[in-house]
Length: 79
View 1 (cartoon, rainbow, N blue to C red):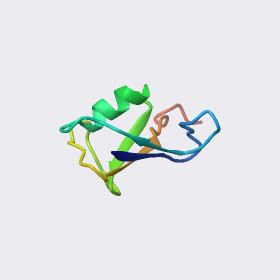
View 2: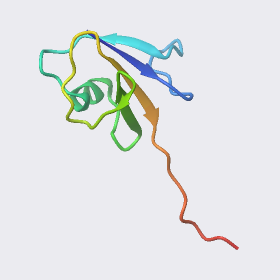
View 3: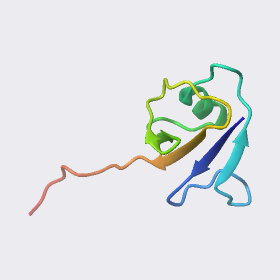
């Protein structure tokens, strides 16, 4: 079981809560957790136990996964 937290205005539960416990099979990755929750890697960045984590990181029982909104923009025309 891993704990998933959403931050900076993302909500994962119908009641607007920002934390959910997710049961995954052994050897599951961040990517598989994202798929299970219907989250795209283009929408969020993941951290596991406070450290930036690529999608292929294998999750262990008790891990805390945090989804942070992807930052977009920049490089636009400036006057």
